[in-house]
Image (cartoon, rainbow, N blue to C red; front, top):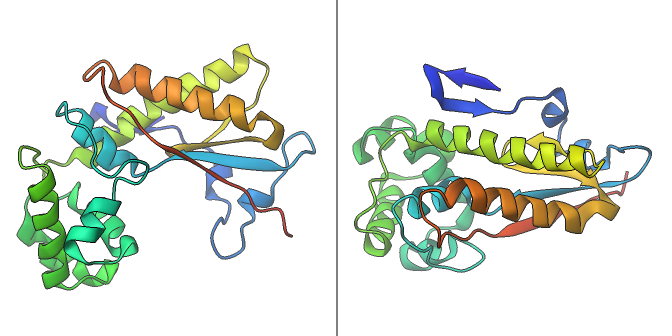
Length: 204
């Protein structure tokens, strides 16, 4: 785990495996564990879900925490996701003007997303540098998943807010991820729930 400032910030589990290319060439998804194909099990909109849950609120949108914000703002999901990835590491809304080009957002789109968020979650402070705290929570969650894997003789490789397992251990991973998330986030809000998605691609 690598921390920033102190042990309350950052602290994700870091492994060389997560640096394998996963988008353009999908090398990571086509890597084998014990000679078997793998799946990646990860959380939907994890930082946003954790931020909302730690304010003891339920996420609007069911399995996709971005969906309601996309509908209200009329901005594409990819840009909404980029907005929140950036926003949770800034001090205020206007600071976005310095980083908009890097995520392909106009200030008008940024404002629309922010207004949609405030409409849904008026009591949540988005600009609180929560991103580093969220990384720390992800480290706690994935550490718990890995240790459960040790107990079950299952290798679970961490990938930020996800884990990779042999495909025949997919259901185990889903249950382990859900349990670990509820255990960690439930300390602040027992009613907190998350959503899981599974990625697989063995076409190489």
